[in-house]
Length: 263
Length: 220
Image (cartoon, rainbow over the protein chains, first blue to last red):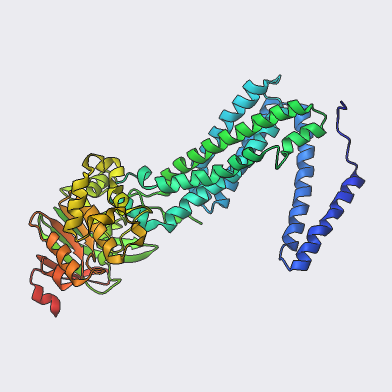
């Protein structure tokens, strides 16, 4: 079996960019107002990935414990800020509770996967730690935005029902439990569906990447299973923790949702 | 038993109640009346902790309403809102819903208690298996009353409970709450409901403008 990836030359990459005429034609033809935002997104993606490529190259080369940890902290902070703002919540109220939720769930799974599962030498090896953390966080981010947004919008939408439960003697956790269940389900169901069809409907990016990188398919599959289980566990734990911890700041002393915490 | 001392409530920067002061003694039945939007419902909801008090204080059974006493208020008073709120399911599930909460778990009514209470509010026992979203507004209101009565409280906050009822049902429900044992704070414009009250408090623009035991004064 051939090892190593066939490099994609810059000319080839430029050629791939020409495929963008297809979405451009679709949007022009249908009058869909997505051309400007698509152009911005493509430029942003290119610049961001180019910078990350340079940075990761440096990170892998230095492979310093402190540098890796610093990068991990930055990833957690950025993910946390994104989760809060995309969920329509105010950063000043939720920053700490959701940071604890995201960090705790990511770190628990990361330790299990990288430190115990892969057990690289050194344990903090950037080649494993950073990409795995990125995959877990990226997926947690989507799931947690969904969880928080669904939970708080459901309480706002069903305010009368929610206060009726409280007036009937429900504790905050009991009165919010229908919305809590809906939010946890909404956050986790897409990943459950993805796992159920993996390998048939879609070939996941990580596995494809490893195979293109020269890994044996069986090695790539083992990694893929491990990452799917890790993402699932981190997502379930972080969506649970984030809603629970965010509730400590989202409700007033009388258990009413504080309006000022919403954007 | 219940005391409002110079209570003010603000919401989104707007004052919706101000200088509200009254005392309700045990077994007293008080009606808050006045134009819609005047703050009557807000008074009931504030007692239940649905609004935070921005000025003044509320005393319930000698204790100030705060985060520590809130739970005791909510488990001592049965609240019936103007628009009954039910989750999806049958009437039986709606009746039993509050008993899913730990605070009420010990009070789960037996089947015969459920039928008995339905009879009292004028509903047939067959309605237990009906979809609660499919029954009429008047039936929903009576299910809400039945549910509140099953909680076996003696203090009630009741908001326009007879507004969606036909005259006969309104009479039946009014009679149920005429019990001497009950302490009631209510919002109503129904003359039948006025007949069981001991006291009438008129609310205008978020404050009390009349507090009387003389019903004839309410007609001025």
